[in-house]
Amino acid sequence: MALIAARRSVMTLFSAPLCVQSHRVRIVLAEKDITVDVINIDPDDKPEDLSDLNPYNSVPTLVDRDLALYGPQVITEYLDERFPHPPLMPVDPVSRAAARLALYRIERDWYTLAEEAEANGRKLSAKSRKILLESLVSTADVFAIKPYFLSDEFSLVDCAILPILWRLPAYGIPSGSVPKPIASYAKRLFARPSFMHSLTEAERELRS
Image (cartoon, rainbow, N blue to C red; front, top):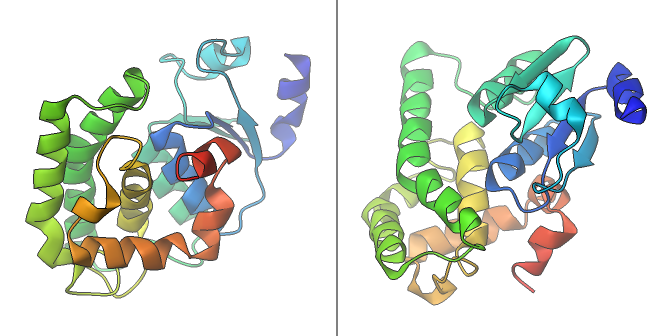
């Protein structure tokens, strides 16, 4: 593991090729065009360095010089503050709180199910598919209000939503069952250069 340690003179992201939480961090890195050494690990054979950096031995884990961060929301907000252009969170406190609340709900309502799918070979149970699809349907009108989720600008909220939408077919939710406002949003943002750059080969294959 000496090679990994030597690389820490630049920012390093420990990621997994199909990890939904790692993907949202990679979108932020691509959107801000941050130079980073991405180390894609095998979740079943994690490097010893990772447990030294992160007591939960989980990905994503970001190393920036002497600082090690884990937890996708901690990492993405750090990146937004460390590299302020383009900004991915609103400036005013009320809008910023609304964005954080949206992120909290996405974590609770969608990422819990996404992580269940990852633990089961990216397949959701019929019950979980129904819960996720109903949740998406209930938010469809929100996607039609503004160009981005609750915003006129691309934000950390979009960075959190896109990995979920990309994986829906792999979760057993056909694209045709998704409400039109969400499908239009997804098609437009999937074409965004930063999103395309964020994809690993394994993630591309989820839609091949």
